[in-house]
Amino acid sequence: MTIDLNQERLRRWKLALGDQDTSGMSSDDQRMGAALSALYDTDQSQKKGQRGGLGKSSPKVAKWLGDIREFFPSRVVQVIQKDAFDRLGLEALMMEPEFLETLEADVHLVAQLMNLRGQMPPRTVETARAVIAKVVEELMKRLRGRTEETLIGALNRSKRTRRPRFSDIDWPRTINANLRHWQPEYQTIVPETLIGFSRKTKTKADLDHVMLCVDQSGSMAPSVVFASIFAAVMASLPVLSTQLVCFDTAVVDWTEQLADPVSVLFGIQLGGGTDIASALKYCHGKIENPSKTHMVLISDLYENGNSVEMLKQAAAIKQAGINLIVLLALSDEGRPAYDAKHASVLASMGCPVFACTPDLFPDMMAAALAKQDIAAWASANDVEVIRAA
Image (cartoon, one colour):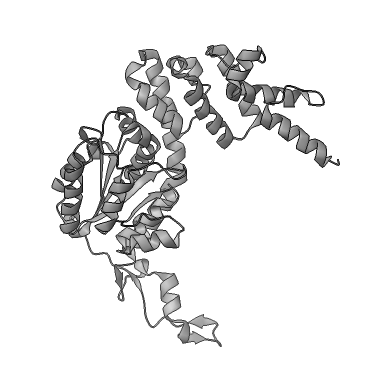
């Protein structure tokens, strides 16, 4: 079937611009255009009395959600759904379990549910928990395998032995080290040098320690979700000691609950003020082995408390020999808003300061555990690093 490119361009422009002239458009295109206009042309359509807008009727919104799911892929549906919450304020409808079940579950929906948790009637709470559990399960599938493989690999590489047991032989590195011993007549390599992993038993004090210190103000919602998932994964690794601390004006240590990330997320209350200084002081006080500790502060650095004290605490952490990394966001979003002055001062202390996507986070932590230069790692991965003023 030959497609008329001019007609196709015209069709797409009509859909993009919300053109009221539907002549020549298929019934599906008209439905798609109506679904988009209901959200994005609300003010204009209400003035002209056309298409009616989306409104706040549960049946109407549920039907609209069904339409956008039919016409757009899941990632696009998530963007449109987030825009609907931002533009039309549909939070009241989320108190209805029947409506909540129709929503596309994603990180932003989890953030909405975390915000509304305290206002939900009992019959909605279990539905909300199930939605959060679904997102957690999907993120675990996406992030767990690579995180475990990357971090365990980074730690094991520094613990090689030249006298391994047979079951501990690292065959790829053993083969590479013995290529000069290739025997053509036998089509094999004679492994004169064996390389493997040491089985030295470690105490908790010997383990590398990762502490995630996460700002739970409203703007950091996706970062809180991803940080909680990564903390749960890392806490399950026997080669690491992991803590999760979340803060607004108060500090809450979730470390003991990391085996159940759903309960952690359902318990976190987003919003409120931000006291980074108190959070850094708390975290510093929990560190037993500074030289083996990597503290990741995840915050946009908008300090509502004492800015001078915040920077003083950060300087004390660095002087103690702790590897302090500052992530302005841990999310799939674009460049975040952040306090540029505070970011620059922290960078001048030698802290790498940048935003990180969830897909890059395991590699970043692996570089930290291997004691690599994190700023150099970020630059090598096309991540913009904040520079000192």
